[in-house]
Amino acid sequence: MANIAAVLHGANDLRVESIPLPEIKENEVLLSMRSVGICGSDLKYWMYGKCGKFTLEKPMIMGHEGSGKVVKLGAGVKNLKIGDRVAIEPGVPCGECRLCKTGRYNLCQSIFFCATPPDDGNLCRFYKHSAEFCFRLPDHVTDDEGAMLEPLAVAVYSCRKGNVGLGTRLLICGAGPVGILTMLVAKQNGATTIVITDVDDTRLALAKSLGADHTIKVMTNDPSKLATEILDTIGDFPDVTIECSGTNFGFSTGIYANSPGGSLVMVGRVPGGEEFPLNLAFTREIDIRGLFRYANCYPTALDLVSKGLINVKSLITHRFTLQETLKAFETAASRDSKAVKVIIQCGKN
Ligand code: 572
Ligand code: ZN
Image (cartoon, rainbow, N blue to C red; front, side, top):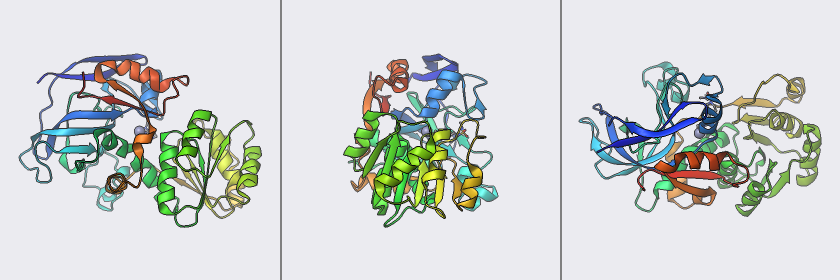
């Protein structure tokens, strides 16, 4: 069983090469990888060698949105059997600290997280993972859907953080995969008005076709002007804003547009972070809520997909093989490609 992986050696230096076959511990499984989605953070590491406060210091295997098939079981594994197909929750926390013990394991300070330096990801042929963080997929849930549970978990968590429920009027800044999935989760939660903004027509068209009540193309660089447009469009302030664009502009738009007394959930991280109308946020009593990845969301994400309540396949625009990883990254990074979610099928040649 030869193993190969997509390894990032430095900015703009992504290679598909041989790697050793992992050896599993008692609580781990060896997986033959199936589908792996490309995320915006993968693109940042590839283009700049860094993402947020994390910098690539040594070669790292990419990929954290993955599904695989169990090919070997550690002696202590009880929840899985050989042949099971699973979605891989990419963060494995220590399980011992106060944050882990209180269920907030996403905040564990010693969490292992796929494709976050120095931890290797799962964009490879064979990969080992803690069995506890593998979720068995029913037969009717595909490998691609299994991979999509990762960004869907982010969306589930963002709606939980924003208390999105029956009757919520919601503004989503950014119609990338997480913005669109957040919209789909919000609809399931009973949000009655959803407006989504982006600069890209194709993404807005997809959001509209999947059920956004209103889409607004961002044509101004003044967030207060966009806020007025949002108010005019829905006839009132949104109760909640979920910022998924990762831009200062989206953050400021949320502060201007959101109803006083509502909340603004920051999924995207903002570069710089200095130039915000924060005093306005304080006097409007807008609660700014941060989040870090997700915790306890994979079971809900899997239920939503397996019961047919959310169609994650509609976001997948391109598929490549593991050998074609570089082409897959180029496609995901190019605006001309009109890619939304690019998937790498690790089991295909
Ligand atoms: O799917 C999980 C995920 N989390 C992201 C980004 C992309 N995908 N986050 C934003 C970046 N942070 S980070 O701490 N980092 C680069 C690890 O700045 C993690 C959460
Ligand atoms: Zn991600």
